[in-house]
Length: 530
Image (cartoon, rainbow, N blue to C red; front, side, top):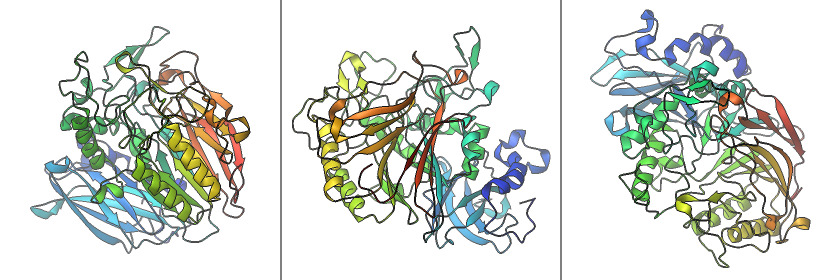
């Protein structure tokens, strides 16, 4: 990169690198039509949607790009931004079958190092005809103890009709997250709102207008594969998000709005919902899943089973257990069953989680849930009083999906699994809940913390009621008192986790969209419950 001498070492921090190199390459991240003439190459492939990396470990990572036409993806990696002694990776052919997206798998990377990468798109018929490279960077996880870990998390992007508003800086929360120089970003779901059309303007309480960037695919609910793809592409029109993607690798999970609000397998949309001509939610989910797999670099989606749930290993200090609380759930109901083996995770995923938690030797075991445990999230779709998440409002013994969570909590206690905590989003406010058997109806578990963050850029909502089954105490909350507060009015949140490399101490900070710290909780390593 332009500010590198060529002799820079891996110790150079990502933040200082970005001030020069990535900032200088910013013109490469905008559509060619508006790029500086020196960068415009007529008839050559271009990547105006930027690049992103995902599921980065101590020795591997995935790099993603989208081309504006058929192209061969080529990746180069180096220890410096000058790309001296670069290593070359031949990526896939990008064509219409994948919406011109592609992911290259990088292996054999040095651990605990800053990796610079650049993606070049070549004409498949003439490899000499190439577009301008697009650059990015990420830091691999440490292989040995001693190095600390920092990551951020949140969820819920472009919801409730609140899209990219350039008058307020677009998705400005991504700049605040990037300024913390995290090792990775955990997105807790609702990466898009496929069921949430975005119009050019929306009225604000003070009489002013919220002005959205609009596209054809965001003008209606997504039903076709092209419309789902267009929803993912919409977010990449935002400058701050593209800058962030080029700086910070992601660990992505999904929830309901990638398909439709509160969906579950086997659901059939009511005839009265005239927004949808396709009423079979399984058909919509299959199309959404394909688009999701095309627009994010996720390791397990490349496997035959194509699942979202997985363990993200980030060195000896941290394992992140990424759950899928959507694909394997049973139908939403009042949640009063006294026997519910399928629950919200499905039996196979629950057994996988128990097995991987018991196997983990990481100091900290973050359970990344796309929905909260003790907050009551109702599903009033079609006028029914059903439950969308886990808690069903009865503070007594576990019922419905609570039974599966009780089984998991009991397992963690009796296997003496240390260092567990839960991170989630979904409810569009931020809070910290401490769960303790001394306050609970179900008591066969050890105390634990659950931290909620979000939204990234969506409507903010009042805090949900608590269910007493697992004894939650809401230690902190910040939420509006009215529903659907716009991003222009605040109440957009993200969280950060820092693990000290020497002591192993873990600190959670809940933050506002500008990075202001609202709440801090310090946890000690090596404990089964705290």
